[in-house]
Length: 245
Image 1 (cartoon, rainbow, N blue to C red):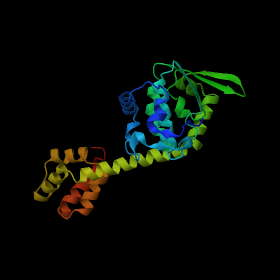
Image 2: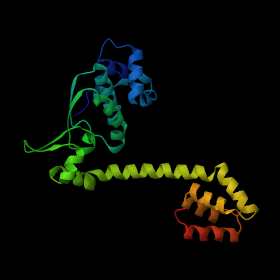
Image 3: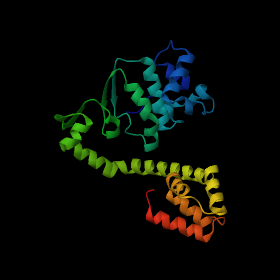
Image 4: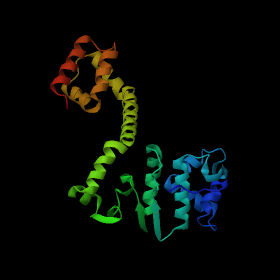
């Protein structure tokens, strides 16, 4: 359940999976699974010394190193026991794509309570006190409405709160960044200039509604002194009449 790392460099910990692997093979592998991004910013990159059990690394970083090591070993059969049980939402997101690559083209048995880990499994077996009670794909088990469906609902009602909240926060941050860039874009400035200079055509009004988020339009109307009160009112009325234009 806990990734095992020994005293040595990051490179040595990864190479343990295949002692004959070259540095280039390890670099290329880490780039493929996304581990290179965090390794390169460590104090000494791939030569950074790892403390016993990876105490100087985050849970997600430790997991990524063990994923790289396992992919280097290239086993035909892989068994994972609660591989993401101790990861927070950020760390789990960090390793999900890497795990998908790890699972590909091999038989993989995953023991998990965190249901995001097995969502893409071709077959899911549900056990209750050692007894097999349900079997099927993720979609089949949800449609059946049995024990798996109850576990799924409980996970996202309780355990999933942290994940969903952080995902929502990330989406919100991206949206704020996107709309901020749009507000400063040349196209936005062009619209403001045209509104300032005269009566915009219906086509321009429609284009504004399609290209600029309503919240950004409202902010532009409230903050900008370049737009006349009459034009702001016309924009406001059109937004009310055509909220989805």
